[in-house]
Amino acid sequence: MHKLSHLALAVTAVAACGDDGNHKTYVLVHGAFMGSSGWDQVAADLRDGGADVHVFDLPAHGADPTPIAGATLDAYVARVEAELDAAIKPVTLVGHSMGGIVISQVAEQRSDDLAGLVYIAAYLPQTGQSLLDLAMMDADSELGAALELHEQTIGIKQDQFVDLFCADCDAAGKAALAAGYKDEPSAPLMTKTALGAAFAGVHKTYLHTGADRIVSPALQTQMVAATPVDREVTLPTSHVPMLAAPAEVAQALLDE
Image (tube, rainbow, N blue to C red):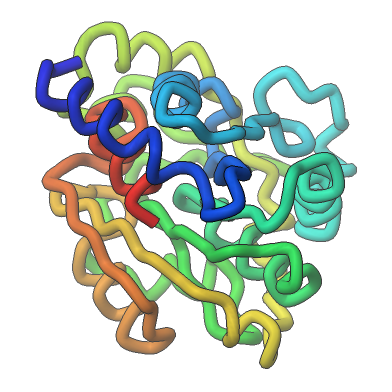
């Protein structure tokens, strides 16, 4: 980590505490084709900044043993809600990529427990939209040609996965990304959200990724225009800034 990044995190350690001395709490939700390990450095930096952090694998991702048939949007939401139940509230709920769909649905059901939502290169839906609906709007995404369709899952050609997701990662980041790969359960990607006033009332931040080849900058801008947010931050990274620029992601979260 750069010396200036260390300094920035140290300076904002105090800011991670509320006026009553309670630490900020973050629940980090990973995206598709990945597990929670992609958050490791960001989580460590947030903890160094004084925050409480919850990281976990969604059903059928990472080390979670749920069979593919048990991977549903409802199951993802229930898993996040279990973390909310265990967390000191209010919680800043953070979603990367596909995780944006999940945190949006959680917010509709648990808005009273949330300090805010942070979308990192994430799908930001309107009610009635699925991830697939949003992805089909993304003419600039380079993902489509690399997909491999299976009976219950969607895969990515392994000779293209890492460079598509994180061409700007260092060797360790690329290795971590490749090691965490799993084919993605397809059913949740087609499930439409049901969002209303509770979701609309939660504070929202969008962290844009300027060199994203998966969720294109154009789609990110389009989604934010359709569902306005309260704060926007842009990093000049690929789709996985948690691995390409973890200190900068942590700082953006601590600045919430």
